[in-house]
Image (cartoon, rainbow, N blue to C red):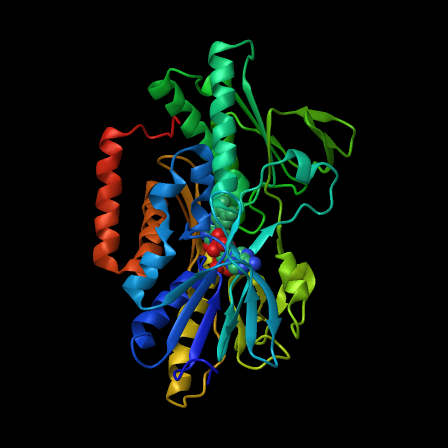
Length: 432
Ligand SMILES: Cc1cc2nc3c(=O)[nH]c(=O)nc-3n(C[C@H](O)[C@H](O)[C@H](O)COP(=O)(O)OP(=O)(O)OC[C@H]3O[C@@H](n4cnc5c(N)ncnc54)[C@H](O)[C@@H]3O)c2cc1C
């Protein structure tokens, strides 16, 4: 029992794809009476990370899609604390978080210490620059809504320069032909086309995208059919695909490949792999594994600590069937959140949990306004692949299901209707 609360206190750190769903589920199930649920995040609102490429392309305004944590807490019976995790004291059962700065940069609340009875670490991951020279200084990454919005503003500025100035085209280089890189390349085409229709700016013909990856196909974690479909779609969109190509360094003007060749770009995006957040190295008692992920057992317990769990991208959790580490995806984070909600509610009734069992439900890659590629697990023949409008509809449904997990089906439907109505008057692409 926490030293300051008569009820058991469950603290979730990180309100992303997994943590926000967990805090909402716990709040609804036990937050009114049986337990005190607290969510901590370094941002004030939740934006679902799988939509960041849409924010970067200007097809989604981050402030329109974001859900405020205090409002989510009010609706789901949890309390929210704004601040970044800085420390963990497993003996005292407390975490430390940073203070809050006001609009003038002065601190309005100092650093705080929050006691817990059960702690869930769900702080996600960040893009891995692999220590390559120039990535930090010259590349955009898509780890947060702010970063995606900065890219979108620079894209717009470049479009204005090309439309009214001497520049001939917008040259965008993306490193990493995984889901993020492929989806971004496709959405950028859609966005730049819309810029011409709505803003009288440039059109697709003046957009040159180069997608670079060291492997021999795009979407290496997907089925061969899905990769082939995505490659055909990217070729139709005119994306210059540079496979089997490694970037040695990045300059202000270009990606420099290991062969010495330079790929000149006005805007550069690094979307090649992820790594755990640096703060985990200063959290006492945790075991940190490959890729800076927190080592957890099959029950999502952080190895070596009691009553501390890892969830989502930050946690290295073995698959009970294969013993391989589970992938860092929103789908895994979603299933782990549902599992931990059951475990924590069950523990109040003395129930012993079974290990977490991941059920892959397939994967979907958005390839522009009306197309997506999807793989769905089938009983015998491995996976079934599907391309075009139907997987696109499933893709949109996934976004709805995530919202529904946070605000309920009725409110999620209302938000979807509001989005649809907004689209009848607003341009499909952000012009400011
Ligand atoms: C562009 C893009 C597209 C993607 N598309 C897909 C897809 O189609 N399907 C799929 O399954 N996966 C996709 N992913 C991966 C997916 O987004 C992640 O696997 C998923 O978001 C992980 O969830 P999480 O809860 O572990 O972390 P996150 O969703 O990243 O949330 C982490 C939270 O922790 C907070 N935080 C970070 N550091 C601290 C700190 N020190 N203190 C307090 N709070 C902190 C952050 O603000 C954030 O709210 C995509 C990722 C990107 C970037």
